[in-house]
Image (tube, rainbow, N blue to C red; front, side, top):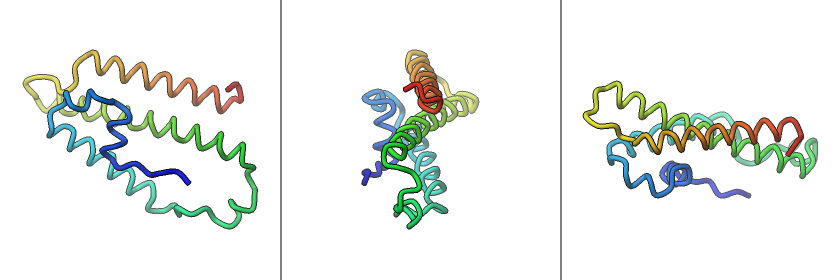
Amino acid sequence: MSVELTAGARLYAVIGEAVHDLPPRFVSRLEGILKAQEDAQYAGHPVVPSASQQSGHINGGKRAHLMMIERKLSGLDAILEILHAAHIDAADGADEPVIGEHLVEGLLVAGRDLLKTSRDALSGTL
């Protein structure tokens, strides 16, 4: 069984120590976005697998492979949420950017890598 991360922990997992370089208001906003996503994601999905899932319709290796892809796509989703929140904050007329250009560039590179490895995994090349 996997351990579910809080919104704050997910944010830290994506951007690491750079979270301390962001304004607290912005971090709170990002955590709120991640929490809302979390709530929406689990609202209609049971946490415990259904009987048909447990009975082996998907074998263990394939299930682990799909879970890995899902985690990569969740990471990409979090990156896009961070970039979107930074874009909105900049559009709101912030005096200085909440995320430096080096962080934006790093998030874009990480997002592209997550997308590429997800595509590779889906095509069976991983």
